[in-house]
Image (cartoon, rainbow, N blue to C red; front, side, top):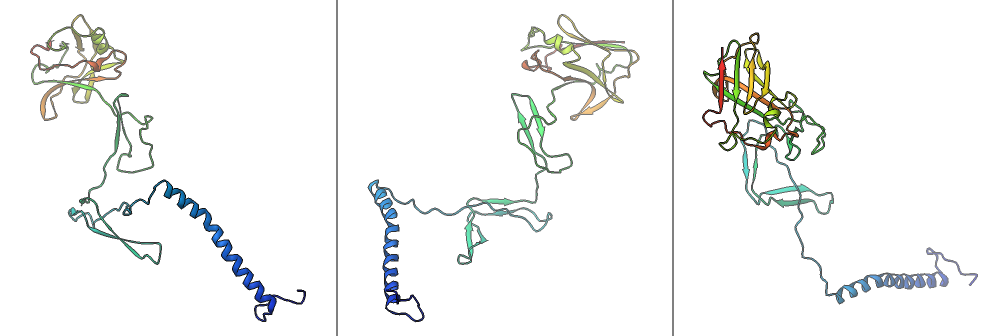
Length: 268
């Protein structure tokens, strides 16, 4: 009616009718919105589906000690750990550790990763213990892999002047080696033979492959062998560093240094 006005403070018959209609319409709308949920529940009931059982919440927690002087502490499984919830109504949440934990003042000193097929070893952290963002399995880093053979003798390698050392390599007790191995060992681009002096390792003046051995020649003007101790053994040392294992396959056969007569020498 034109004379009716909607005023909740001074209601008339029109205001009363509008409020009644609004209440009925809102209840109808709420029931209609529940139709989709009821249909979904009915569909799941037809599938005989049910709710999964309740599962406990989980997470990760880090423990620390008061200082580095404190010894490690063992925490038994079931130790209660409290956490503040972001929901004010929930408050403090109580967790229990699942396994035994040993808290130690030790820290990670270095991190390495290896590639067996690529013959590659790299260090991820920086020298000095500094940590920075890094990419796992990054083959662009410096390759720390080394293949070195050391030969030591207390008397036979005491060479001061010119000398010749002939090395025989045995494969399973026999003198037959794969083709190209001796040539690869004598190739300075793939292998390097040196001996220890007072100034460090000195490359032999000559290294050549012969029919059944590798001949190392120390020139007269080269410094003499120096007595030193490596890995708890004192003597005169020869070192062979493999620079490239391809394509000769130098690393594919086992060397047996304990075979009698595996090394021969002549000196002046």
